[in-house]
Length: 363
Image (tube, rainbow, N blue to C red; front, side):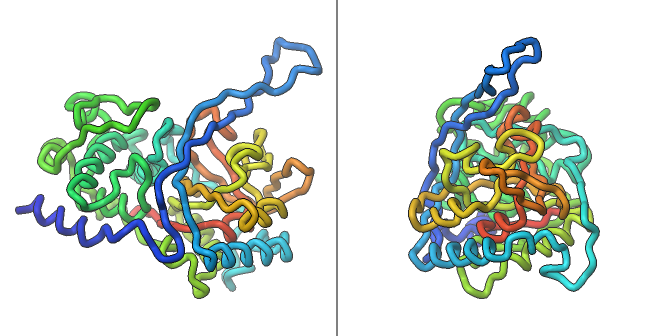
């Protein structure tokens, strides 16, 4: 009876991945080129920075003409007021400190491999940072249960994407499985997360999951939505106000799992053309990216964790333009990508292209 109740809750909470003006219609496979510094014992000044390549998946996002216009208007407005987003008083009357950095409380950089599981990785890592147990929650078991729920019509599996509140709802309703239990008991026939290869076709039933799971402790972890993907393309949503809410959340010790639109994948690293700590480790808003909302409307969705902000931090794009005011992000493309696994994002890029945000906090 308890499992039936859980299934009904999931079914009622799931809704649809389709919305009138924004739709998740599958995934986009792209080659991730990770710039690698040349060896220190190579003295040739002509030695170029080498690259390591791997395959990743982004969510394929389709926008209506109305939605494209909304994002285009946001981009134009942000470019016209470049630099104003670095003022922490822009979207709130409260005086905020210029810098907050939470980090990940010892949670290592994760690697989703060539699967579209960024949302599951972002949400579970953010919760791990609260639990203070290191790399604790099994993403594999969540995804294998997701395969079962998808087959029975409740929610997306997560292997090829989902929505933040769906994944959090699944964790809240069904509990979590530790990576130790994953290794000892297996989940859907697997004991290790398959970084490469096809998405697994096997699954884990609710009964199987329940036998080795532990409750989601709502007295320790709580969450709520700051920005909903189905509301973001309405005129009433002001993502610059969301930016202020994100900064206040960080000030209070809470990380944000958020979804963002990426485009111009062939430039830099998945459209990240700025540098703060490493080559192409920053998403910044450029005139080209703003223009391509209409001219090249292929959009990828990706989920990461916001772990800090710095009003005075600067990323320099590939044309030498400085972008002031950056969020610090934890990504799930492995520790060799970005700045040792972390990335950065200018405030104006976030305010233009953020599509989803969940505040995850210690109760």
